[in-house]
Image 1 (cartoon, rainbow, N blue to C red):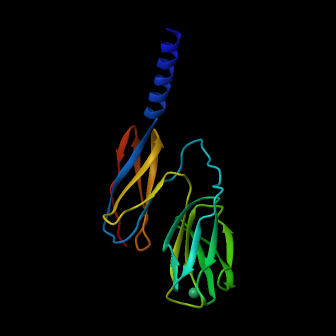
Image 2: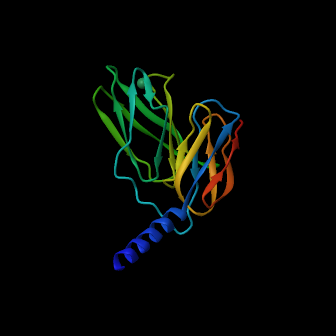
Length: 195
Ligand SMILES: [Cu+2]
C-alpha cells in the first residue's frame, strides 16, 4: 500500500515535469540554407555559460561550419586545420539594430587555435584577411532554446518551459524577424524571411 503511494507520487511528479515544457516548431520560407531560430529571453531566468568549447575550424580554405550557433558566455576555439596560415576577424558585432565593435584574433599556422569568449548575444560575421572568399557566422543566442533549420527549412526546439516568448528567426542574407509564441505543449511558429 505504502509502495503504491510512492509510485503514485512519482508518476504524478513525472507527468507534471513533462506537462511544464513543450516544443516550438515550424518552417522557414523565403530563404535557402540554414536559418537559426531561438527564444529571445525567458523571464526571470539567466543561463550559465556552457563549459564546452565549440570548435570552428579553418579547413580546406573554408570556415567549418559556415554557421556556428553558441549560447552567450560560450568560448569558441578557432582551429587552423590547413597547411596554410589563416586569420580570423570580424569587422563588427551585430546586436539587433546595434553594431558593436569587432575583433581581430590574428593569424596562426596549422594545428594552432585561438579562443574567444562571446559574452553577449549577437552575430559575428567572420572573415579571413588571407583568403577573402572565406566567410562564416557565429550566432550567439541568449538562451539554450534554439535550433538550426534542416534542408527543408524545418526546425524544432525541444524542452521549452511553458510560457510566452519572443522567438527570433535569423538568416545570413535576410532581415531578422521576431514572433510572439505561447508555449503550452506543442507550439508552432513559421517564418517568412526576406532581405
Ligand atoms: Cu584563410
